[in-house]
Image 1 (cartoon, rainbow, N blue to C red):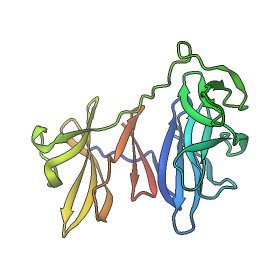
Image 2: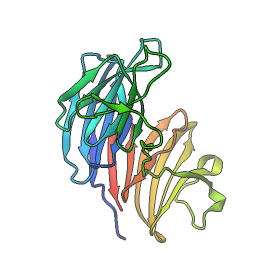
Image 3: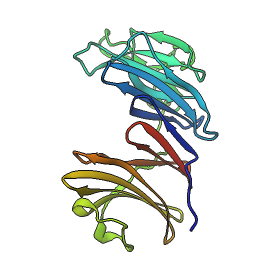
Image 4: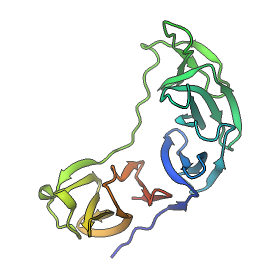
Length: 251
């Protein structure tokens, strides 16, 4: 039996809270949180080589900061208006080597366009949007919706299917007969939950044609079902194991 092996398998010291992929460079960024001491750090890897570009970098703000977006090799972080508000404010730009390119705590991120980030100053009303240079933080010009098309990524998310819609048998019985499913070229990728002694386990399976070529236990003995377990990007299945380990399968 042909067996797939992960091209990337890396454990981190902290829970992986969010991942972001910069499609132009093939870099994946991770937001890592440790609730016990309320600290957050950031790491990045090259999906093409598996190399770690930077690991566990932090900002002066230990907790109220997170990943906003990534563009052209630059990671954009956001802050918050206050510790009790979910509204984002402030931008910190991080280079490929983990160094800070620029920061501006008076602006906020609105969305990503094909030509770069679009930002605004929250203190001014009505809101004015600007196309911003990702490398310097300078406003290039006023945002023009007709020119500055919104950036749309090529990440494939699984769709939900019922077990009865499959034309093959699963190795285990899926709880509630529902699973996450992607068909890609000759591959079928599936994640599902099983229930044992009142606790859930979350599984991942990969078939090539009619042969099971990969499986992994993503979470075991958890109290509630987890959201979708994997994404597909550039022939790669990307998923988290136990919320602390990043794994990548090249199909």
